[in-house]
Length: 591
Image 1: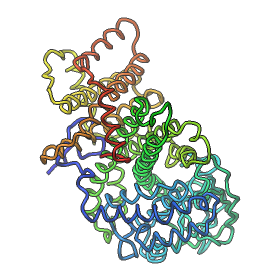
Image 2: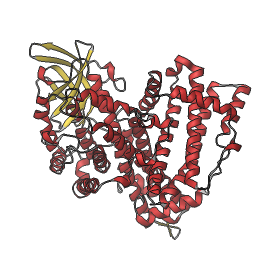
Image 3: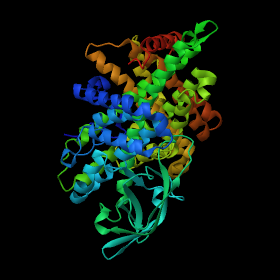
Image 4: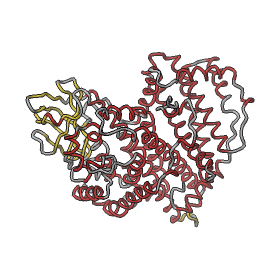
């Protein structure tokens, strides 16, 4: 039976998913909730009380905390049970990620270790490597790190200069790495180098290896309690059995592991956003100005409502993606010889969604910490309150796991590639919408009364505007479209907004079909709808005004307006106040 289009990576653009097929936070099992509580309690009781020492780079405390996390199973969620891990599903893994990033510096230590520090061996290690290293990584006895970035090769990872030459029983590595997280106290590094100068490969390197030189700690804007050092390889000798996977296939490890890092980072930033929102609300309920608590002020309520709506959309698409990954990965047999190839194939299927979540989550957290500093006023700019650290710590997330600029290009680049290869019928859908555009009349639309159904109709119109804009861009630039980065990034932002808004709507619809209506979800969807329209409209105009001129441009803009002129925004001020009141009453994210 042929797979439904909506379950293909990027398929959400051209086909609507049935709500019952989408995994949501309301689908968490008791086991999921127990795992989440374990992680949350660990952070609250063990990590946060030690924040000041962590920020002073007391790595002994971090190692102690990592071992405690290992005892609780919080380091081995993605490690198979036979190698000392928990072998949990991706929903559980993402729930742990959401909770563990609450303390920025420790969250970075933990996230690097459990993600890019451990997963290369889980997915690509041979049996001997898995037996040797995974139990130690899952327990916290070993701390993992990932050495890809170089002074001249950041986002351009394939341009690394580190070289490896096989001499007898050893590979000899020469070169350097930069900005390596956990390097100051890591026990095991996944190091990328080019064998014979051209075959991109990966190696497992233990601390203390002859020729490995670890540099000084970097002085950073944020995440100051984490370790970030350079590495130098001076004729470093690596046993040939420490080659990870195969010579010349290291890029498959790098890019697929980065995809996992992106979705974990995305959900982690959403979790951090929830914690920051909680602090903003609690402070607003305590702070009195002009004889009133500032939580009563309309502009403070507006900030809270915007924070909540962004978190809701981010959370909805994070667990929608987790459900898709579980559906595709859990059926694989880890014991089969083709397991690494199958894993690469399944993860790459959702590379677009992974990048979307990373971009949306990191920029949502930046918005939330910035607004929280504003809620605190001058106190938010001092070290007396933790929001100053939240603000600094948040900034790195737009650089981690590929900059957001690179991820925006990944989103459009992957979709273009899939369309050209015939894996996703985007071109056919663009042609269909282009023909519809000529005859479409807003008079023919039956605008529903239900506010969520109105939002759903607006979402479908947004998809049409995206497809038309993409088609016009492709027609105008043809092969040179790949070089039009501003156009590609704007298309990417339209795609991201569509995935976020659709995920939020589907989440509500799934509950409604079960007879469990949610007023707060309905309010959030209504509130977000207007922002969605404004973003889609402005991004489309930005692109089209670059492709068309004169009367042709005027006619095109008038034509596009047909898709949205029927929409009448609701009373956004009243809705925003209701969302804020829900949140203020609960002193937490209210969904």
